[in-house]
Length: 487
Image (cartoon, rainbow, N blue to C red):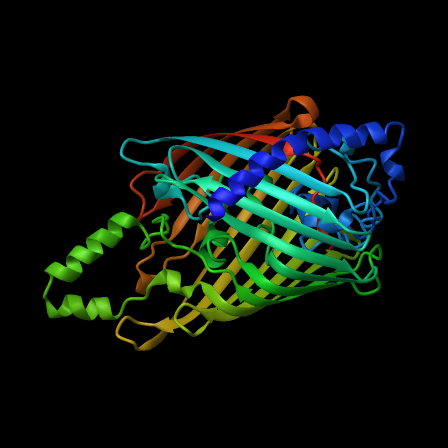
């Protein structure tokens, strides 16, 4: 029922996505974008983090309707570019950064954005997309609609905004849909923003970003392994706090609490033990083998998916700019909550990002400036307290890294390099895995409404039957270009 509702909404909203920006721009002809009531200097705001969000994380910036990105020291890399002149971002024009866009929504205006993403892969003989997928947002078949993102922002006032985001995708068997976010954000003052509802938790550099804002076709390996298949979603509340207020170049602290949104593990994603073929093989062994040693081995096995956080949890995230260079931002994240075993999982991470020659890449609508360079890296580790299959308490630890470099070939094209690695987990029968990716992404068409991407992945793991994959991806964006995230 949810998927039919989402697709019905998508088709109903598409004409509005096309027409509303035209109407709005007619009403704003001659109106300078800089005079929209918000200061594009963005002191304390990492315009980069238009990179770490979507332009829907602009969507995730649903709190920016028409007010001076006050809360916009966003959750994801907030305080970059304090005092950075937003009008001088290495030559890229923010006035046309999204498809058919309305650059700013006035209070009370409903913004809507529809992103349609199609992806096809080329594989070695005997391999398929499902073998390489590590999250439900990765391509799940050789040629699929990887995702349909629908974002609706409700801008009640300069300080009160709401965001609803839905996601639909095509698996190898059927279409599925889900509600990703439904949240209300209230900007209390320059230092404090409150969020309530269902939302992507602040953790690391990827978790808050929707699919259409990813810099690569697929998820980071470490986020997919540690953070509920790269979607740690909270149903609860969140507090974002900037000591001294935005614009002072200070840190952003984000505290979150709530219940994890339940996750379906039914697609046999290729993280190792979860693969469908392996499950069938394990079932055959379980039924056909009577050997005592085999039974003992089964009793000492962990079900890896049960290590995900599934009940109440708490998160803490901090992003701190380097005092003498605010384009260098350090981050730290922590989460603890009840897992599928009925015990606790603890997740922790650190990261850093440095931007040269411009503002950060925003992942949608345009490149981030010719000659601009962004370097970033994350380490995430996890301790899972669980149960062996015989009911004996036990635990396992795993960890991984992700390192990315993005370079602006032009104002519309970006070249990306990424390396990812995750450790093995013997008790859960998961092998270590590493992947090197290189991708070229370009925007074109009216107002850059079309994005094209080609990507090559080199994979290595004992769980994989092949190593090489090539991807071709296209995205079409219709919408107002204003989404919403007050932080």
